[in-house]
Length: 640
Image 1 (cartoon, helix red, strand yellow):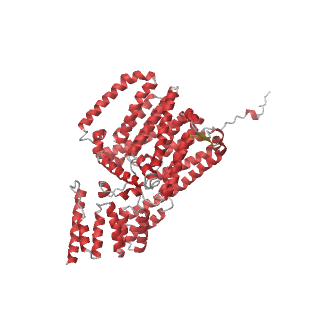
Image 2 (cartoon, rainbow, N blue to C red):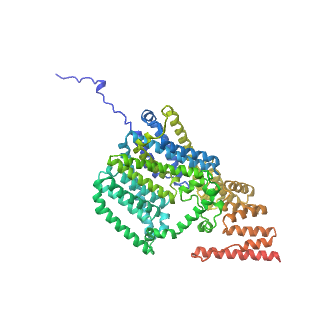
Image 3 (cartoon, helix red, strand yellow):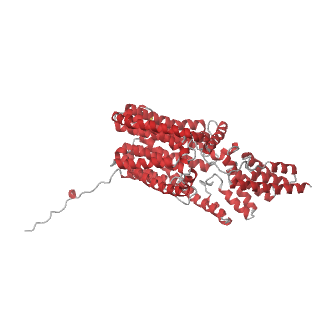
């Protein structure tokens, strides 16, 4: 007989539950892995605003997907470090009220919201399942290591084929992932830190040594002194500390690592004695040559002028995002590239000093306290934690944070979105391991206000999405305007400049108001009313840009407003005493009002470049002397 199949019951049907950790995995991949590779080629800065927009969207998506899990399982006690981070964000927001530019202040402040959001969500993910976080961050680190290194290897090969290992050439080539070779090298340093942090997650030791070895070689070849210092400081701390924390590592340290370190130190001393002359790489490896370099002299000049600015705005500074506008107000006399080559500095290349200038001594103290408290938490954990793996993790995280502190003394990681993610992950991991410390310190329970707290963060991130979208679209139009200006397509320049401007995007990448491009176009079209209106607005938005002043004054001269033009040009020359184009125009303006002694006086103030070393410098001198001769003859002819 044939047996009938028994009917299926509901209990026999197997249904798979959804993975509750899947949203955390997605969030970590988007924030740590994908975000660091996002770019938009059509933007003026193809990394900054696009990554700001992408990270804001990713965090907003993460909050939506994780809301139920967070409500049930999150740590809703804001401990001391959480409150410190929120206090830092609050000060940034408040500083908008006294900032020079609202659009820049809002953008800078909301980047701090991204820092806090990544920090808080990564900390919650660690509390939820640390092994999951380690797994995802390890895989993302491995992916970033090989993708970024692969791109940089191609660019290095191109640079080496044409220029060898010339440092200046590397700036032009090593820019595909983070904007310039310094920022790229700094990101490689943090990838090295995370590779060491997750060394036990590597299935094969060979892969670990290949990843860390490749990163070390690229850091060496990219010749960024700041990262050299960060790596050296990290190595000097890591190996002795690990030998102290892990007894089984001591034989390796004393027999192999310590002798190798002594040998490297002797080689470094020999390099210092030789000064590394004749080789770009050898010279940059030598710390003794840095103080003699153009870069060091330029930084000292910028920091000196920033200190002068700080004296006038001691307690609260000039407002978030405003340093780049206020900096020339103390004049730029003494900065060679700033004066002779019209180089515009938009960052102080020292985050501490820039924050000091923008948010005063109050802001600088609060910012530094974040790192001080994080290091205190690390020391507390190293002293009280017994598990060797945890102690090793805290040691590596501390080295990463130390490297970040060193880097931001000579560069500007607080501006870059990928660097803020790195900082947030380091802080989240360190505070996660210091849970026992926070339990002893003050905190605020917000469990009853969890919905309100999450809603406010979500609203802030939604606002970020709006800011990011307007900045990205604005920069695309600004790029088109600049391209049109370069090919003298004046109508398109005007159209694109107007389309580029919005509430959150008012300047180009060197802090020149977008109206300036429009004014230039109207000037060449001989439409003086809209030209002057555009230049006047540009002057209002950046009253210390001598380029803006010069063009505004030129338009005023063309319309016959000579006295106002002279006043503005004299302000421009006060900012840049070597601004010869401005001196020519002042001399010409005094000639028009028949003040010949003043016209001669300003003509005689025009300088040539002393001891010109390049053909461009010699050509500029010839042009300057030729223009002087022509104007002198005209003045003398009028005086007869």
